[in-house]
Image (cartoon, rainbow, N blue to C red; front, side, top):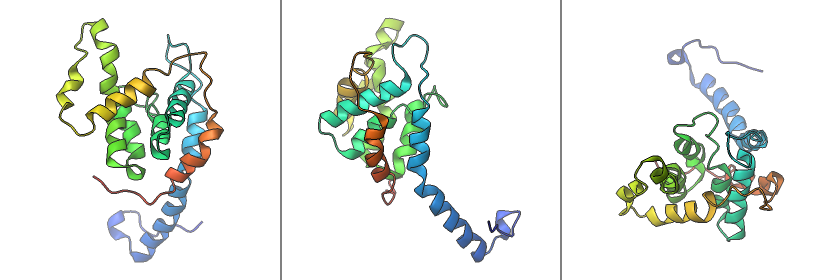
Length: 185
């Protein structure tokens, strides 16, 4: 494999950066493969849950799919907790960052905020304020995020639910991650 000539980026030339761009485009095209591979390994769970993180993700995506959500939202539902293992304190932002180049502003916002909105179901049991999400009540995606949490995320911890398999979602994961990136920063 050909390599660049520089050891510091400031000394790179056009040929170096064209070479890197070629390799980076090839790497980017394999993003869906890496995500699907990572997802397939989420068979462990956090202590106390009745199902694995993978099964939770599959249930969430299956519910979104069966409700007629867009491919983009189904993939977002599948990946909404992809950050749990590597970024447990900010898993929503992690998942949203992975999705951001490939999804709409709305889908990105829902995934980015879902963890915060999910505290509605638990905070009051732990001495917290379950209504903290109301600080976003005037945001245009507030209700959509509540709906995502209510219909899909919070409802997907059932060991008896018959979810679709990861392979069933492969075509739409590949479709979403082969899109020309959005640039809504």
